[in-house]
Image (cartoon, rainbow, N blue to C red; front, side):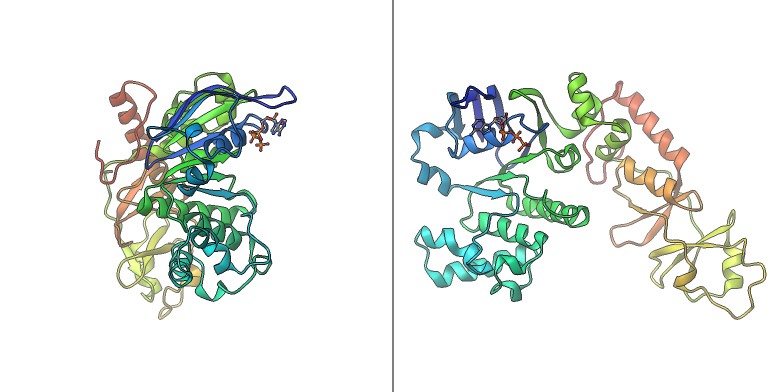
Length: 383
Ligand SMILES: Nc1ncnc2c1ncn2[C@@H]1O[C@H](COP(=O)(O)OP(=O)(O)OP(=O)(O)O)[C@@H](O)[C@H]1O
C-alpha cells in the first residue's frame, strides 16, 4: 500500500504543484492519477520513489515512511515506466532488460534467461532480443520498457503515460495486455495519464486531480461515471457518461431467443428459407457465428449456389454470456438484423437478444439499485 499523507510540493520558483494530497493506493491494485496538463500528476508519482522530494507531508510504503528509506533501497522495490520507454539507445533489447538485475548483482546468465521469459510475457518475439531500441516500433519499445521495469520483480510499479506515444490501435493492445499481465502479477500500480478513457479502462480506482494539485475525486471508474463530485469532474469525465457506465454493469442472464442459423456452405435456398425479417445468421460448422446474410435479396439466387464468407455482413459485434450491459446493447445495436448475438466462452451461438430487451434489463437494474449507481461486472452475475 502507498499512502500520501497531506503531501505538498512547492517548486523553488513558487509553483505549488501538489497541495496537501491525501491518497491511498491499495496493494495489488491499479490506482490511476488523471487530470489536465500541469495538475501535478507526474510530480505526485515521482515523489513516491523520491525522484522528487515533497516539501511537506509524508508518503508511506506499507508501514515505512519513504523519507526514512535510502533512495537506492526504496527504488529497488519500485519499477518505473515512462512515455517513449526511456530505453538506453546503445544497448540491445535484452541488455536494456537485464540492466537493473545485473546492477543488483544477479548473475548474467540468470538475468538473461529471465529477460527472455519477460519478453515472452509482454508479447515480444525472442528474435528482437538483439535489436537496438531504434530498430523497434513505438509499441515494441513500450513493451521493452514494461519488461525492464518488471525485471527486478518489484512489488510496486510507477507508470507515467506509458502508452501515450503510440497509435490508438497499438495503445488498446498494450492496455489489454497490461490488464492481463496485472491479473497474473497483482502489482501495486500507480499509473499517470491525461486520458480519462484510459483511466476508466485501467483503474481499480481513479484519482482526478485539478490544476494546483488538488484531489477533486477518488472513486471507482463506475462511481466516477455515475456520480461525479462536481462540475469540474463531470466535464473532465466527459460526454456519454451514462452509456459508458453500462460497461461496468453485468447484463446478467438475458432472455435469449433461439436463432435459426445456417452454416457456411449451405445452399442459398436453405438460407432464404431460414431468414427472419430479411436476415439469417451464418455460422461455421461448429456453430460459431460468422456474420449475417441478407435473405430478402436472394429471391433470384441460382439453385446450387452456396453461402460464402464474402456475402456476409460483418457489422454486428458478439457479446458473451458474461457480457456487460454495454456489450449486450452494442451487440443488438450493431447487428444489421437488430438481433444481438450472444455466444458462450468458446464462441458458440447461444441465442439472440434485442435492444429493447437489454434496455428493459437496464431499467430493471436501475430500479433495483434504487439510484443511478451501477456495479462492477462479475462473471456470471445474474440480477
Ligand atoms: N522543476 C520544476 N520547477 C518548477 N515548476 C515545475 C517543475 N516541474 C513541474 N513544475 C510545475 O508543476 C506543475 C505540475 O507539473 P507536473 O509535471 O507534475 O504536471 P502533470 O499533471 O504531470 O502535467 P502533464 O500532464 O502536462 O505532464 C506544473 O505547473 C509545472 O509547470
